Image (cartoon, rainbow, N blue to C red; front, side, top):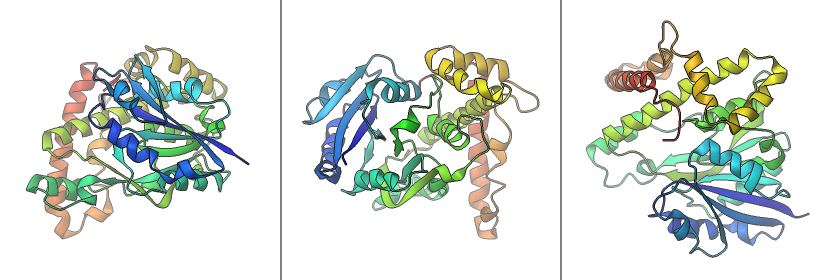
Length: 331
């Protein structure tokens, strides 16, 4: 039996590194598997730097040059319009990651196929400053220590690299403009589009398979990154609350409408936020670090206090950006 696998490479202004990344991806073992019919499609979305042209120089790669940017919009295009109708497995991959293991993609696909009840199987994300700690400066070492990694990656969806059964992905529509689409996807998958209680058995991470991604290396860049994450989480929460207020039978049709309407997400956020007493961003995004019991050892307190100060800056900036109406759209 032959399995059709479509690999979507999400790329926005990645001209500088896209050719090298694709060369590494085309060297993956998955292309030599006799029973896997693999297609690689670069989703160059909203690019202004020649990403599509550079991608076309790599043999065996197809390119979709999409005028509009945005991860959730591009996710919808890949799943519902651009992937092959006969595809059995869809692999979602960011264009700025490294794949140091030649069997990574094969492992994800075969791991997914071996577990019929699974809807998402993720690779473990590893920061480059953790994978290659040699020669790091003081700030970089502090960032590596303070931010760590995604400890619960097996219960999350890492948007940088994961696989889904095509039939399950095509039941999902993502609102256009989500700042953090992987967290939203996780909620949809676990709850069957908010119609059932969460079922953590639907997602997992594959032991022994990882990818490397570029960490922010300066404090200012890290703050901007975390502001986006906090805003994205606040936006997602507003959408969850909007959907929760609808009858269960209307939630999937509402998401399909959200995927086709550029103004849907902004209207929902304006209707839901701000709310008393949190404002635009719930307070628990500021206090969650303090609630982690593993951070309460006496030797951890200096780092915990510094982390809280960092979180406070992020929280205030996120509130300001949301109040100015900058919380929805492509980043």
